[in-house]
Image 1: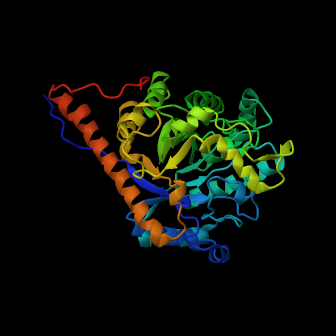
Image 2: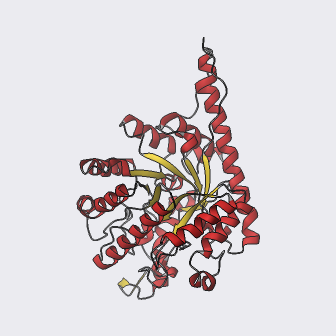
Image 3: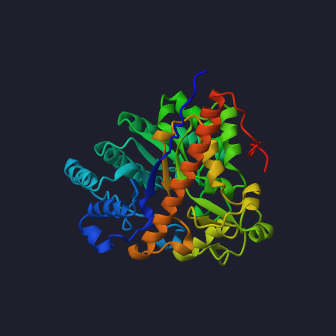
Length: 413
């Protein structure tokens, strides 16, 4: 008998810097583009967070979507109005060394298939600058969306993905990068009633997209940055999503995680269903899309009438909600990842993403204890899952001891 030692493998912890957009006020960071990165690295050190996911975005002066139309305002802590060069890289790498805080990856969340060709070109050019930055900083992945051309149907968008997105993945491959796609359906991106505005929103589409990537030799560049909040939004549960991927032979696709929950409102679901509010939202005026960008933010009622984002650790422990797939069961989420996905936990990033609306405080002194608490919760839950996995799948089997009970089962709630 070969007795296995108890060797739990925790995942790696990180934090998306969009959690605090104005850590460095706009006037200061516009004048000194890399100051925001330095100050975020220091802030992460104070939070006892070992890494950050650096948020990149088109500068507000260059963006095609006004800030007032956004549900979750973006943060351009990586300012790429000017290309990121070796001098800038040396400065940022020095700050990384000084603080001991790493970069898990760089995040640029935008619609890379947007209908307007000029806007699409600007976004692609910006993404290439993000790729260059990642290469200069020794980061091996970029996280973002695929997006959708809302004027086209889904099959047409698959063709557009092959035409427009594959070249981006070829550029990622040339730089030794992986592109990790977050699966949010982005229902509020448009003021129509289209709901799936990021075509990479679920396992079925992931597999279809990956097959296109394989055909062009960039299958290894296309991976998923799984966020359980979006599964809850669509009535899914993590264990069943992971089981489906394993059943189909694609459980290698997920290679990173956003740690963000979603708390479904049963009353809102009763009123509108999972398609959200379809009429009288306020984004249309006099039979046409409102001329006011602020009104376009009401398109997000397709989502917010039935769900609210959770910062991990801030929602009540609710076993009934877990069973109804109306809140994230964090412990089972972390167990299922180890049991069903083809990944190495010790090399896998858990990136805490703060989008809990009522706690999106832009005062570092007030936000710091909230983020510290959420990071501690995430670390503890993952440590518990790592311990359970090591005991149940390594230590006990090596001694022929059965595991007790049944546990949550895929495809059942």
